[in-house]
Length: 176
Image 1 (cartoon, rainbow, N blue to C red):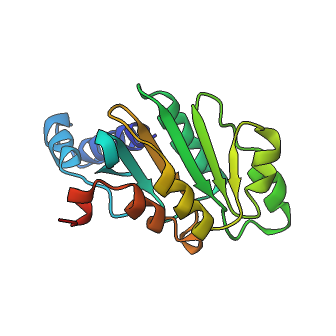
Image 2 (cartoon, rainbow, N blue to C red):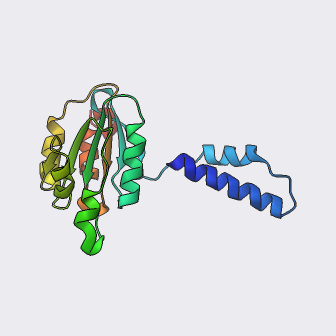
């Protein structure tokens, strides 16, 4: 989904160039976008245990961003694992918005928090855990291998960055 955002950014930048009377030039825009890196907790790739890849998107979540992240994960090669936590501040419709997430194309689904129980009810193969402490214990037992891709996504209040730390390669986590 970031590719679409970057394409839109490039289009707008080229239109601004044209509006200023300049000849639109994509090369400098592409070079600037190539240097862009996500901030911590925003779909940031990290090395995981066993040669896996962790996609740390633990900083924020809403229904559209969760769906976009899952759609991105579903298009990648390898065993696709999604660890999703509750989305906060959705109001009275929170249960339906959690239940409405489409997790098709995901090989292993781990759901964390009371609101994610609604998505678990629609996905009987999913593991549902009541809180982050239980999810950390589950993550410690998870066997990861090269080619596995693990998406970790939730609202910041769920503290799923703790799960990212559990799944990270020891070298990446600073362990000796």
